[in-house]
Figure 1: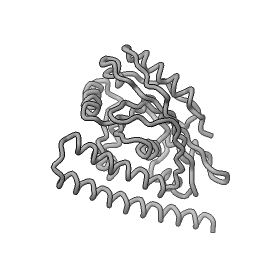
Figure 2: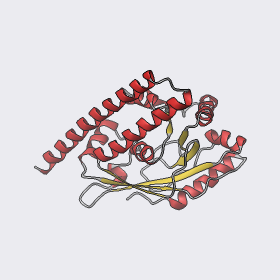
Figure 3: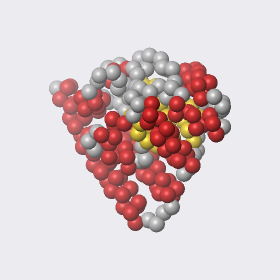
Figure 4: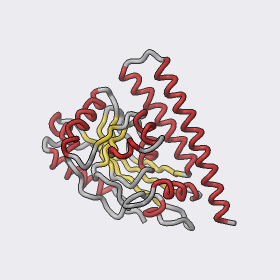
Length: 256
């Protein structure tokens, strides 16, 4: 009986999430088509709709977001540790931003199209030759007034610690002397639910549809988002990556 109730909860949440996403996508598309906006203004409209979607999605899926510190205001480059797809909801609910994501996400049915519509910058992490193209898109987004979130570990983890940060996409910030903001993200689950490192974090060979449906079965889960106090500067991208890793690690709460 308990499992049937949990399955019903997940099904209702999935239906609500799909309905809400479709409605807000239509709102975004209508606004983008009808309003005579500059490129920057269109980006702000997209950001407003995306943030509304993220906050509504957090409520639908049972995410209890606890944000501390002050979120940066666009334009900004924000570096965060990566624990899975739930990160997008937590971060987009906490600040106005676009994301840098692996190329494979862009090919996912429905999800890929939605990501492209929100301004996601895709990168082929297996090809170093793709870095200059992605880097130029990051710079363009910043110049247009967007906030850009970079998962500098390059992959999602189970949250036992923070992996060393990769530095190539920090080249523009280092070269131009731009401030780089940082935040740490962690998850927890209430008593009686599965541990967050397997039920919320999405890593390794976990299958997305199965994992997501199991997440929707939970009553709720907590997301702790801690923004750093001050931005970090450095003219050397590798040194910058090291400083950011140390700052994020100092605030990180391991996922249990």
